[in-house]
Length: 134
Image 1 (tube, rainbow, N blue to C red):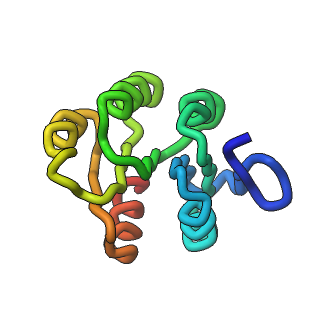
Image 2: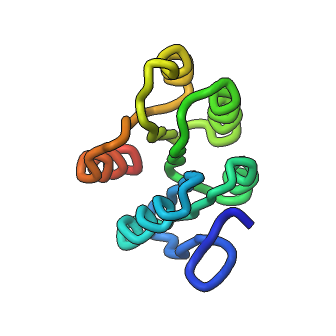
């Protein structure tokens, strides 16, 4: 499967008192790094497969969804679907800004709560995660 956890096939750190984040990135290293960085404060479910993301969101409750992907028509449709599926759940996007994404960036913002351009300040992102999950 495209998602992972300690010692098994799915990354769910089960602590019901922690806020739950679902994180998608095609970059396995970024998934692992963010998981390690945030696991003491959040219950993280990660995936490297964008096709699995909707199924994971359907199967798990969450307080926040993070997408590490540039905006596109397909990502806009995914965000629209996630907003319908997880009404009220904030969605954050990470990506490297490029002018070719400018139109997509503008149109996708009606479905996402925040956009962080890479490289981003991890401290700032951490503060935003805290605010969005409180």
